[in-house]
Length: 181
View (cartoon, rainbow, N blue to C red):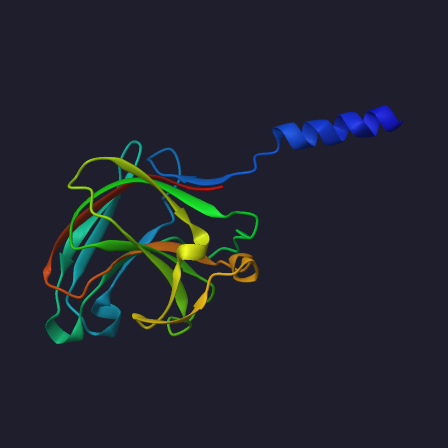
């Protein structure tokens, strides 16, 4: 019996995937991701997302007219316990207005979220790794004090991308995958 328990624990340890990955594509993930523009607050920015064979393409134009200034691509709400992870790996390419990745813990737009700016890649595919502890806390677009703790990572409800600078301009952002390890 002891050998059977040891064997079962061994298989659980070896074959349990310790990583969490969102792998975008037409026959993969991304069907439940949606674009939310500043029009929810009266703005005029435009964004659109399209699933490609092995990625999701998010592009549009940021407008500051009518108090606008952002476009975002977000997953649907779902409980995600990311407390066992310390890093995020992202394969993407981008150009234009800068973007950031966001982690949200509430369905309410006014509850602070966590954000990490992403470097522009001049339309070249890049893989970056970010420590989750390096995400900053934001309240309605303004950086505030607070850090992304293990406890907060256990309460993530939404992962997303958002244009990260309040300026007029076009943007294009294509993502292959987001991995947590």
